[in-house]
Length: 209
Image (cartoon, rainbow, N blue to C red; front, side, top):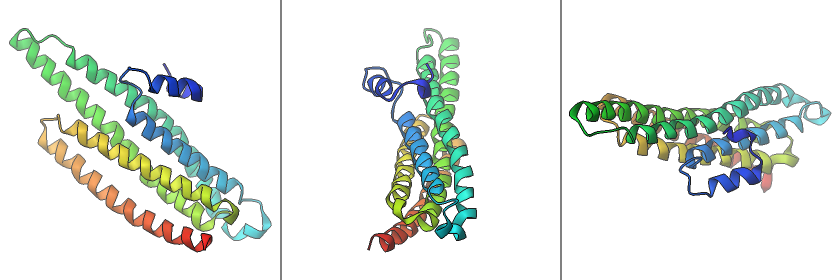
């Protein structure tokens, strides 16, 4: 099942079912895709309008970045669901003998690493989105400032939920070097994003004053 091919209503129905997927990770990626689309919308409402000519170049860059991010977030939405299914499959492997149990543990470790890698990729993409959406706040059509600000907040939601999923997945991983690398990157990205959002909020307040 390709999640991006579902209608909005179908996706909501599937999300609310008793199935473990799609779950929060896929929703986080979808929020990112929506934020990227809003950023592109603001850029499109700015480019080619003479009164905003001085920001056309920067808004063209926002459009390009947003298009790439929209596609990437949709991929991540599917990847999150697919990798979690592999985790479930690994936990269902037989464990009656020592060899079976060892193979099962190895499969679980590998599946969990992949499951942690997807939300980490989502987190990385969310940082890029916050930068693009921030540019839309600062240089986009001021009549669409709340749309650009909404894109920033969607990116922030994407980041927070993705970080939750990284943390829960690495909690089951025995490879401490892998765990520490993930923890360090999550902390660093979230710290940078907090600074970016504070800057965007300041610019948004100026427009709304």
